[in-house]
Image (cartoon, rainbow, N blue to C red; front, top):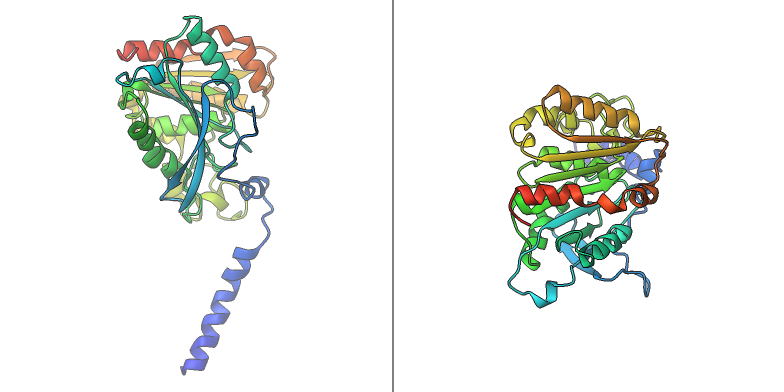
Length: 313
């Protein structure tokens, strides 16, 4: 085969791949994913008391990424003190400008003496990454969170840089992501709070005949990626350490898009002998603010008890 023929052959072989790469996404999650903005400066007056917006460089992503952080009232006056951290993951379509209701509630509770001083961190996880790494490396949301962001926070703030001083939580996609990360990395967190986050059977959803649909377009054609991101299989893999974590799960009975898999996750924990707290909120739909308002007086009690049992508050 001469040089011209080889070039023509290579061009013909690459054409379908190029066409596929340029194809307009049809899956709603894919369309929304492409709307992600990694840095979102807050508007004047948008940030609650104690919350500030910052930017860090992500090596995995190759660009800057925004985050917000709440620091308690005594933080600046106590340079030698270490604080526990709650990682609050946003829902689908969100960014780092989230969790402000929780930050206001935490500030109020700390000032009233209801809860100890804690740090609350709100990262930007991308609009529909579900906090997983995409198979093609373009959306390294898990790596950004676990391998980069948590070490970054520990290195740059007065945290308790150990499992017993670290909690994770989130609503909807944030609850789904925090649950999977906690099951995959139980050595990192002492407390999980899933707020109406779906817990799908990711391995069962693998379907190579639908490469453009979620999760296939994101996790790719290798079933191993789907298996490695399946919460139910992660429970079995990491069961011993998961049993030492405190887990709280809430979901509304009228949350038709989430209650089914939340119940399945609850049952899986029961089947594996994992002690946890589970509550179905009668009549509540998929409404984050209403959930917070209903239970604002006890919102952080579970995390605080987890931290107390670990001797970090």
